Image (tube, rainbow, N blue to C red; front, side, top):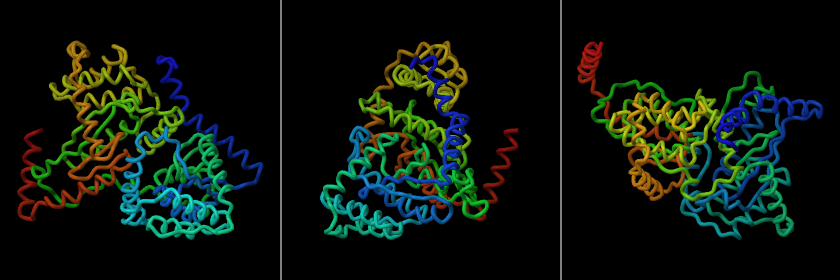
Length: 457
């Protein structure tokens, strides 16, 4: 696609107008069939997110008029998982965060359990058999819990393993042909919803289409973001809270764009420093991102940004020269105390305003919107000192179990994903409570704040 028209095509593809047209088509088709929404779910026994999703299904059935069918898969496309071992380890730790916030089950002992391929296949057969028999989701969740506890699971002796293996492969083909690659996904009339993380989007759609069982249903699965940035009910000694929030960030990553804006809000809210460490995009590190994965991420970022009130979609992909030009000016921006302003200007310009960073006119706008001089900045575009910095940042996240960005780190806690800021906020609030201002000191603290404010006026 020509770079000059790419932003306009992407803006149309991600537009609410096109989304509304697609949804009306499916709504009309369903009306003539007199059917309820059919949710097709793809689960994988050794995938932690699948276990959590199955536990959430009774809530969906209780709140919405839906018909749910589930299909088991046992394999994953290795092309979609460039660092599969790291992904598997990360997903277990990450599932514990989600289980905690939604009060779901996930055994702590799961990190110590190693499953052989045969046990995975046997458990998959047992789960598919339960689904075929019409077992409750609660019953299926109990079977998955036993698996994650390391208990031995037997499938019925009467099952045809060869036939089931073919079904599992057919399910994987169906997942792929409909446009996705991850387990723990729900396919509903042309759109995908991954894990409990994206159930809020599904709920919002079902509510808008009138499928709530009770009047005015409230979204259940929004707890990872709905309560962010709550006010503190105590004063703190900011001099003792100098620990920064570190964000590993890519100039090309759509999720990094959201992460940067949200991290700035968070650190401003709590009065703590932020440190942004750039890394190269995956495709500039030799990691392949298939088109199917790229388009899902793009559309998912659009809806994630929209729910947070962030503009996104008029995207001029900076891959290659655009990223290099961005990073070439990092040192210049730092030297002029405009580092964060520059990153914000670049991120917003590229992701929301279709500004091409591979052109001088585009970079001029980005630089000047950050309060910097283009005449000075353009002399630094050939700078390559950033490469050592970026390489060191990439090594840092790899050594700590991550390969993609955005990654947040605060003290000794590291999480991956723009939708994991709630974990970091919890740690920040816990840290701030250790530095409460004592009652007597609070009065002096408030006086100093008032004096400081009056001097600023």
